[in-house]
Length: 214
Image (tube, rainbow, N blue to C red; front, side):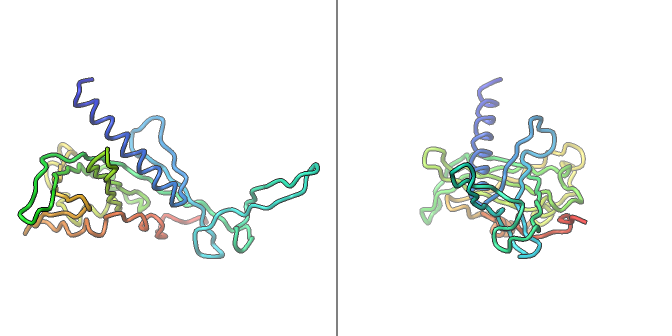
């Protein structure tokens, strides 16, 4: 493995670890595939059908053998009903480290970041998401996340391009500042969608058609 390939592997693992910690902080259980052939992460979170919101399982204390012992139940921590279901999301992770540092006339620093969406992840299953991670600086831990459904690629790109149909390796390159704002205007494509995607972890918690337990 040459240096550039090794660097890409390291930055990719760094991005995935940061994303895993962010998801865990938001209450998701994060699983990584042993053999990565389609999705990088499978994430789960419990949802209470009675409360109509995400809830943890009830933890109760029982006196056993002279001590109070904690026991996790299958019940909702709020309504105490047996109504918890596990919601699942599938995430394809892409990590990009910026290049070509520049300073605009207004004194704003920008770097170019590349994102390689692939239409093979654009499935009819609406539980499939992209997480594009933009690493500005590992030393200062400056990082931005863009979370969106794979179908949202249509909001900023043309899926009929030959680079999607033939090579499955279309590249979208965007200048982005440290705060995660995309600084590119185009008459052909609308990159304002990335403002909606920026740190959009809430979209993972929106109930969708695939969340059916019957």
